[in-house]
Amino acid sequence: MLIEKLKNYTVYLCSKSPRRHELLAGMDIQFEYLPTDMDESHPDNCSPIEVAEYLSKHKLSPIDFSNYASNSIFIACDTIVVLDGQIIEKPKNEKEALEMLHFLSGKEHTVITGVTVANHMKSITANRASTVKFKEFSSEELNYYVSKYKPFDKAGAYGIQEWIGYIGIEYIQGSFYNVMGLPTKLLYDMLEKMVDN
Image (cartoon, rainbow, N blue to C red):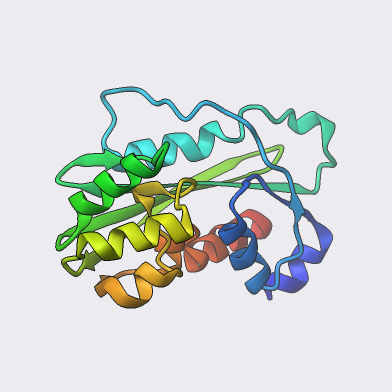
């Protein structure tokens, strides 16, 4: 079983996201916190899937693996929200958050997470996409959500696990946890590949 095998490794989660921390802990995986600071810019000619995968790989670039034990495993993720081919980033302020949520209101959008798992010898990158349909929100609802929850650290300006998700999600196709920022089943499969080889 993977949990037993991982006892021989030190797993590092390279993310500042409290949601990813919570989800990885929920998988009963022991891990160390290793946030990396990096610019989230990407090449202009990439598709949304390529952007999510590129950024997940890029988050590992500041780490010098030679400073860590050979049994170390590093995990990095990047989640993006896409509507009509347009990538919706994290909002910088309340005004941007409201604009993004008005744009998503009443529509179906895609949430893509790129995941990279790496050690000294190899790196695996994959992605998951989920489809989310929002109800039509009133301005009052969106103002309430943004002023109370301040979703400035979230792609698309929302957290599905917060009030807006409880009252506003018509349906989800795909992984709920992917929309939170960590496709847990995909990560489990990737870790199994990493420790089995």
